[in-house]
Amino acid sequence: MAFIDYYKILGIDKAATDKDIKNAYRKQARKYHPDLNPNNTEANKKFQEINEANEVLSDPEKRKKYDKYGENWQHGEAYEQQSRQQQSRQNNNGGPGGFEGFGGGFGGGEDFSDFFQSMFGGAGSAGGGRRTGYRGQDLNAEFQLNLQDTLQTHKQTLTVNGKNIRITIPAGIENGQTIKIAGHGGAGTNGGPAGDLFIKFNIPADARFKRDGANLYNTIKLDLYTAVLGGELMVETPTGKVKVKVKPETQNGTKVKLKGKGMPVYKKENESGDLFITYDIQIPVNLTDKQKQLFEELSKS
Amino acid sequence: MKTEHLITVREFCVYHNVDNTFINSLQQAGLVSVMIKSNDTFIPETELQKLEKMISLHQLDINVAGIEAITHLLDRMEQMQQKLIGMHNRLRIYEEE
Image (cartoon, rainbow over all chains, first blue to last red; front, side):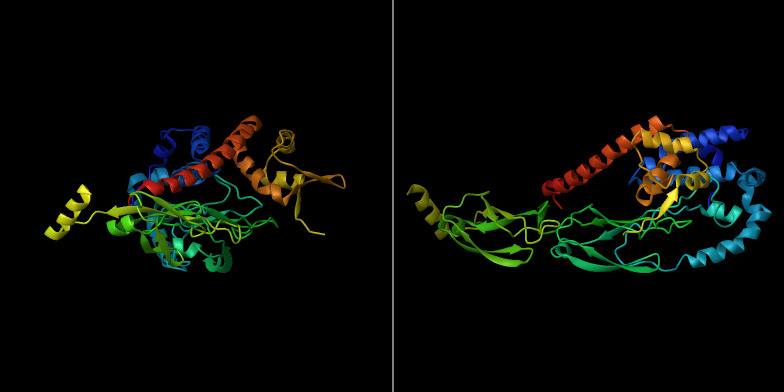
């Protein structure tokens, strides 16, 4: 566990007055406050550091303790006292892990560093940097889906902060899209409403299809003979293989539209995008003498 | 009738330690709307999130004009973030995996 230089975080020196600290905190907070940096985890992390620095330095008792032990804090009485508390806290950390697929976990909670916890014990007072509102905090979570999972609207049960909630994931949802589950964020205070839960969906690039909205794209190898003479081909779509007719004298790079074989259109029932396939014509290799002779004949015809 | 939880502006200001005039200025700037019922001013639940965000900005010494500018910028930023996600997804078409 590393020592944290709270003065450095706020950009002030040890002689700073209460007013200096307040000003420095506000200046930094104007840059990194989560409300000014939506969807910016880096800024949120930075804000937590600033908040923690302010929590310690703006509280005369905490500041005194911090200044007294400084970098030698581990030899201080405080460390001994808190280490037992710390241990029990860590044991609790292995609690409910939510469900699989939840990547980022939940944001919004005011987390203090291990350094802070070991020096000052549990969480800080709410009166310090930010005061909680009537409305509960919004929570953020991430959920991973495959392209295949988004072909149909489906229900999913998620465990959020120990509570099971059932959500509907509409077909055709796209990578990076966020769904708001109203009222499933943190609880409100003094009868205020609960915050909302925001679930961001991550859909990794599919190995088979490229996607643009509801349309899908794929390149398919086509042998020279079928391209020249025409024929049939089995083509993979998200919902299974379909038979496609190949016109005679098909040129390399020809694009064919398979209508309605793309992804469902988000929140539009019975509407689907298209699947576009591009032919990549394969020139035969390792020709036999006989085959070479036939091509020569062809070239002279 | 749909029941809605209302908080009086008075109660809200005491809790957040802000002046009544701050809420008035926000309302005049068109940033929040309040409700007047039987001679008392209330904050509808739907406005709470916005308002509490503005209060945290106010506590950083940002005045109403600044909050107004920030609100517009944040709206635009959100639109841009949405566009960026869309562009990022479209770019995947050209990326080899």
